[in-house]
Image 1 (cartoon, one colour):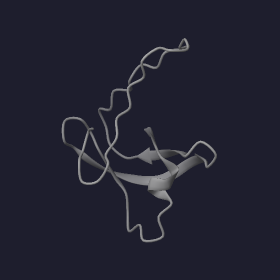
Image 2 (cartoon, rainbow, N blue to C red):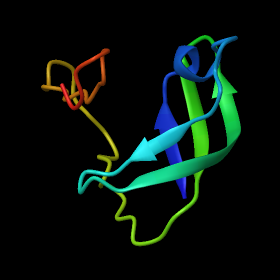
Image 3 (cartoon, rainbow, N blue to C red):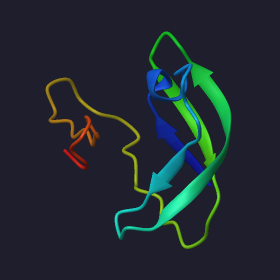
Length: 79
């Protein structure tokens, strides 16, 4: 299942490994980086596991609409 994250998160020289944590607390291994966009700080990861439910993404958004961002600024999760 592809997951998205920031490129700067996976581009650390001291990175020993990656995992993804689901909303229900499951921890799943990241098996690889599928694609990156360094200009927009985006990486698409391959995450191993089952039972993932993708979030719906709007086809379009109008200027001025609110945007929600889920982040994990160390050491706080789901901010």
